[in-house]
Image (cartoon, rainbow, N blue to C red; front, side, top):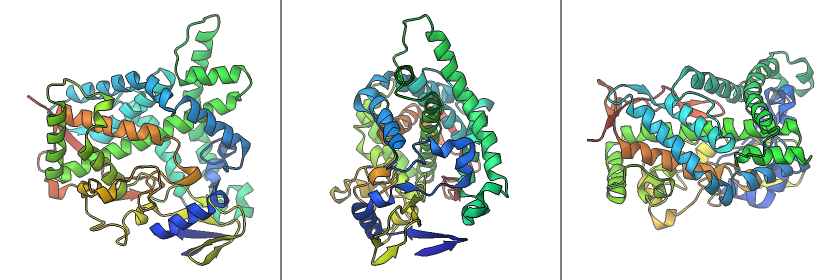
Length: 431
């Protein structure tokens, strides 16, 4: 469908067939971003790989830096030990609160944030479950939410310089707070490196080497860390929280997942990252969670940069915003049986052997084509690993007085799709 949003035109793609036509035939023409004015604060959109058009040389350079140094098989393998240690720290946090009600999402967010920051920068940003974790999460969620807020600067672009509602100024304050945290990490590393030949051997070392040789601007370094750390930790934690909520709401699925872990890993004290890849039912649970509750329900809007785009027999004018409604696509009755039900078994069917790469257009939780999420290689390792570790270490129960049928799994839509009511759960150590 086509929407007129003020003076802008938006085209919404809500079916598998339309998404396939758009990406396979017009990916290059649709690979720019419709940039909300709030993302322009402090010039962020002009240097972020999230918002730069794919035709921009800086976008290509940043994506190459990230793909080569962070999310390559070699880079991920090098940081595996760090990720495993951080997941065990998270398990330890829950073990210290065994038998008590915990704010599951907040704890997992702190754990995921430290996992990402330690893997990339060899530092913990927050205390798991503490106020610092909540403060950072609020900054990130604020910046995610403002993208979806109605803004006259987006609806009537010629009024953009006036920032009439103040959303760009509001965002600038939050960007600045995040940049202070990240610049602190970078500056401390640079100070420690002066006069020392010792290296941490992490992603940040690789980036600083590129900065020292002039291949990467110092300003781009902070932006890359923001893109990777802020976006990566939130995506991982939200998905794990949704997964635990659906498992607690569906006890039979939880029992199957725990039985698979017990049968496969019986006798092991802790789960390794590679173990999670050998748990097909758990992998199916993760896929079903992402199908039913994609973190980015409408992905990030694309923009048509050329004429000649036609989808479903309709012309898409140059300059239009193109929205891929992944939430609707992955609940399309034409593509999925019982689309609104949580049924991991559908992904065990040979006909449903789909991966996260966006090639099967009925399943695009990470997008598809040129704008496929660059953090996908890490997410598909880390999410099942965290979930398997938590199910291996604990039995999970709902708080007293809350039944599985009563658990609220309603969605709160902003740019991200989060639980409307944060999940409270009780970890019980397995005897």
